[in-house]
Image (cartoon, rainbow, N blue to C red):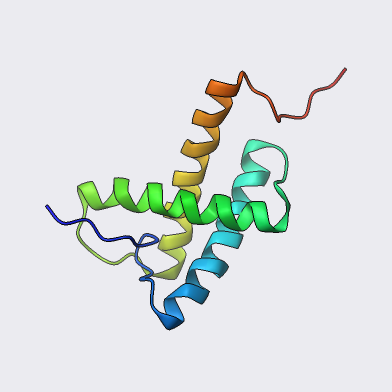
Length: 100
């Protein structure tokens, strides 16, 4: 089984790198809104890219096709939500906004 480092369907080439940044930023921003709290401009991009790698890996286990740009964002959001949930589980929910 061969694994390639891709952000869902956006490959890492000259034009693909910009796609990683754009899709990662959008996915990170959406994830920040869904999971409560923002992570800053750079944090959103990193969260979205790492989420895209996680989501792309999970999607790659089930389908072998390209999902397009909007599908890439959806897959990256799914992966980023999974990542944030795992991080919060291990950190005891640290980083969440709390009402005192």
